[in-house]
Amino acid sequence: MKWAKQLQAGYRSRHSGSKNIWFYIWRDKWLYLMLAPVITYYIVFKYVPMYGLIIAFKDYNVFKGVTGSKWVGLLNFKQVFQTDLFWLSIKNTLILNLSTLAVNFPLTILVALMLNEVRYPLFRRVSQSFLYLPHFMSWVVVAGIATNLFAQTDGSVNQMIKHLGFNAIPFLNSSGWWVFTYVICNVWKEIGWGTIIYLAAITGIDESLYEAAYIDGAGKVQRILYITLPMIRSVIIVMLILSISKMMSIGLDAPLLLGNTKVINVSEVISTYIYRLGIVKAEYSLSTVIGLFQSAVNIFILILADRIAKLIGEEGIL
Image (cartoon, rainbow, N blue to C red):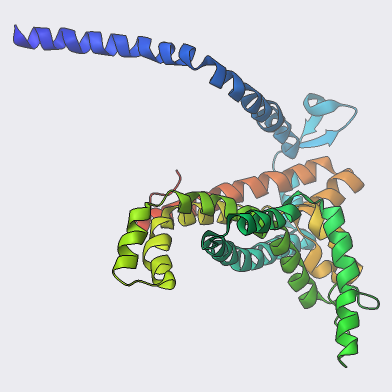
């Protein structure tokens, strides 16, 4: 009889648990209602447009529509993969993203650690505000500032270089210098915004650990190396995985506004290539093929990076 009572108790527990789900949903209905616009946004602007991926397998005609256009299978993929400019755009995308990641990722962590060590609240808030401000600037404004600073003839930076007796540097007209300028502009624009998550993770560290280390004679650098960094290592790994998963994605604004015909061999990236192919030339099927290929590669990189993180003992994100 004892086992029967336990079985009945388990059934009641499971039955009441199923009711509890709806109870909690109804209890937190206003929170779910606040979440509804976000869910709606992703459904309308992220999932519904996936229907348009069919265009990649069709000879799309605007007047015939998606369903009326002729089915061509993988012919569009073959045409794209045989184009030299497509592979050039992939190479440039990877170069710019890897260069930006190599500089921006460690600097973001370093700036977060430095801000955490500031003991004057007013100075800390002001510093954070100035660091966050560039993130909210349009790339049109940033590109205008970069042009005024780095122009070869009348740019402020080159004016100072000339006054020092050196030749002007073609920041925006030479391939190597253009990549350098692009990375610098990206770092300046996003480094402050990237510190938010790291500062939040650092804030969650138990203060007693720092107090115990201070009593034992550990200096600031030692506390950072042996307490702060190990405690936020999981956050660093997650952010690194998310950054690596975007290696094939790059914004349109920066390469398009900073680039020119002299540096097209390094400024032509996937986003600008899709823009010229899809918007300028109206090759919608081919541009959809590139977008689909880009998303597939990003997913593969994400899974690979997550697997590597798990192999080294981290939790990963999947």
